[in-house]
Length: 230
Length: 230
DNA sequence: ACCACTAAATGAATGCCATTCATTTATGAG
DNA sequence: CTCATAAATGAATGGCATTCATTTAGTGGT
Image (cartoon, rainbow over all chains, first blue to last red):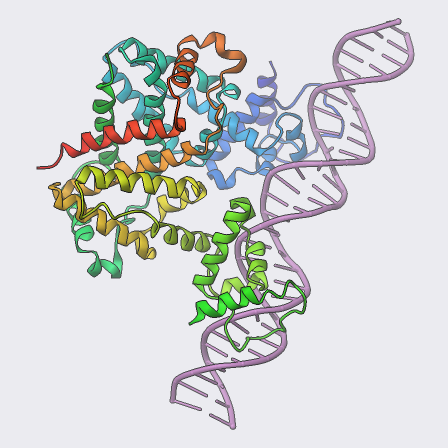
């Protein structure tokens, strides 16, 4: 159970005191599960800027070059993290309630998970699903949900892709600063925009602006895509 | 007219032969417009990986440190590029045709421009509009288009944000490899997904898959959001 | 029981990158 | 005329991912 060894290696702690001597250790120190866990810990503690191969090695109490016996590159580490996060997305709606409710719960959960991990979005967008079992499992469940709801088979993938595109874009939006639409000194030359910004800020008492936009767009997509069902 | 000087500096060429001697030159060599143009040239020639401060300096026939007299950081360069690209987005539909057609043309154009520049998307998402005049101009035109079409003022910004989120996510989708949904050896355990992938590939004779998904989602958003008009 | 191969660690490079700093030279305001 | 300021050079600096030679430990075949 190498994951346990890795966890022990980390909890043993050794705060940099006596170093391990060179050569293969009796019990393996590293494995993918341990690297993934350490990366997630590092990300939550220091953010993605803090996720360097050197920092990761330090958390695992290992020399940086040791990591390359288990992953081919830093991109590989990001891939491990990405696939782990996919397992956190809520799929419970598919199979129980209506298609609309299932999609809504899935989309909110998906957006919320990746709003905390926007640096992974460029990775996901280009990642072949073959290399990501959790991701593949999610697509299978969602596809089945769409099929059972009466979607024509050839429309399922485009519909999921459209929803995902909206979800990824919206995840970025969550991270935007509050004053992103403040026109500052240029406000005079943008009367319609400035008024719209003021008005939407005023009309919104509860919740984040990003949530309002997400809710609005998601409802539009769900009703528009739902019409494709036979 | 410093932009001209910069252009001359670049066309003079000097292919690295005799170096400029230290100290302030009689005519300024650099300015923001020239830096922006050089960055765009570099990006189109070598991609975003090739856009380094050193490479940019070389194109402009200048020492890397000289750039920092005009921009505070590389992020600043990306911001200049981003704002320039915004001026390429098609706004001609607003003011002529229907709201639906205007939004459709705007959205396709917006997506196509940034599909070639996805590394800028994280920059845009966090960029206060104050620092980006072209971006601000675009929002003004689009806001006016929504207002004239009968949108309640407080819904305009959320509606635009929802559309933009979909556009950014879809821009990533354009860059995805063709075989991104190939399940490979895992296909056996994902029957519904694999069948959906096969079916959507078969049903689609013309155009890129990304275009199909974008068209589908955009129509859904336009009809859903259009219903908000009074 | 030996031996060769492979796996997994260390530690010392390597090369690239953004950024900073001291220095030099030119311009323009008072 | 002079002096602050702007705009260039060139030489660091520190951080980064990655590679390589080396060391040690397990393993499969004979």
